[in-house]
Structure formats: C-alpha cells, structure tokens
View 1 (cartoon, rainbow, N blue to C red):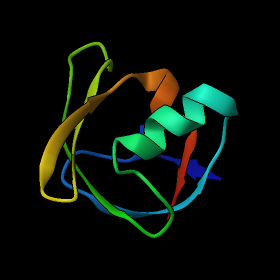
View 2 (spheres, rainbow, N blue to C red):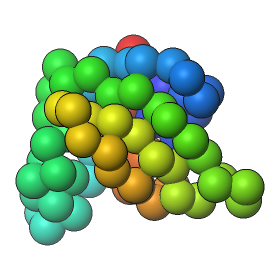
View 3 (cartoon, rainbow, N blue to C red):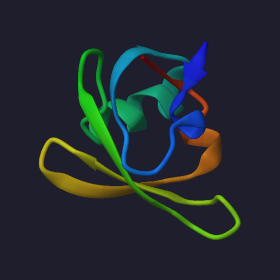
Length: 73
C-alpha cells in the first residue's frame, strides 16, 4: 500500500482510498481529497512535515499524519 507520504516531489498520483475515521476522514474529504482525485506533490518541508500539494487547482499543506491516511496509486 502506497500512501501520499511516500510520494516524491513532482509526482502526480490518484487517490484510491481514504483511511481513518469520523472527523479526521471528514476533514480530509472537506479539503477536496476524495476517491479518484489527482494530487500533485509540490514541496516537502526539510523535516518532511508538512507536505505541500495541489488538489483541484488549489494548493494545500498536509501533515504527515494526514498524508499517511491517503492511499494512492
């Protein structure tokens, strides 16, 4: 299983499944990250947290913990 945290800078991936429960999963979905959405990884901070991505034509920063809940291909 590959998660968004494992994706390298400059890669574009597609969301396969969202893990997590309740409010955490809802918050990720409210940010526009849903199944079959394409995500482009723009930057990763020097210590790996946060990750800056482009989703649905806008930029978004995600914590490592949130990125691990997003399964991609």
